[in-house]
Length: 239
Image: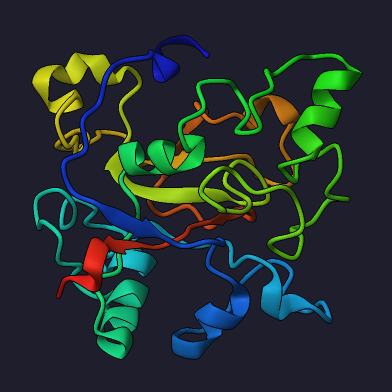
C-alpha cells in the first residue's frame, strides 16, 4: 500500500497484446543462454525464466542505465528483446507499468483479479493461492506456468510466480509526475537509484505482494531469483 499504490486515472490510447504467460525458460533458451534459478528441473521448459537483468532484456549495459527507455524510445539498443524482434518481426517489448496493471485487472477493482480482497487471515491466503504462486504454496521455487486461475482476459500468473520487469523507471508516487502520470504514462525520466518497476509477487514472497496494485522497485542490474517478465506488442503486430 502507501504512496506507491496511490489510485489515479490513467488513459491508454493504443491497443496492445500481452503474453498469456510469463516468458518461459524454453522461450528464453531459443535466443539466449538460460541462467534461470530452476533450470535443472525436469520440467524446466515451462517454468518462468528468471534472474533477468533489465539491460540483458533491452540491451543497455548495466553501468549505463540511462541509455534506454524512455530516452531511446521504443527501440531497444540490443539484448534479448532485440533478438526476439528480429526473429518474429514483431515489436515486442517489456510492458509499461500502466499496461501491466490494466492487463492484470481485466476490469476488476478488487485486490485480486478474481474479485476477492486481500486479507491477512487463512481465508485471504487461500484466495491468493487460487491465482498466484507465493511463499504459501510454491514450495520455494517457481512453478510451471498456467496452472492457476486466469484473469478476465485469460492471462495466467499475473500476480504471482515471478515478479515481472516493466519498462519504466520506478517512482514511489506516480501522481508526482503530474500530467505525465495520466495520458499514456511512460514513467519517470530517470531514477537516481537505478530502479525499474516490477509487478507481481515472486514465488518466495509473502502473499500480501500478490495483488493487482502491487509495485516494486528492482535495481536494473539485479539478477535476483524470481525476477522475470512477459512481453507486450502493439495490436495488429505493427512493425
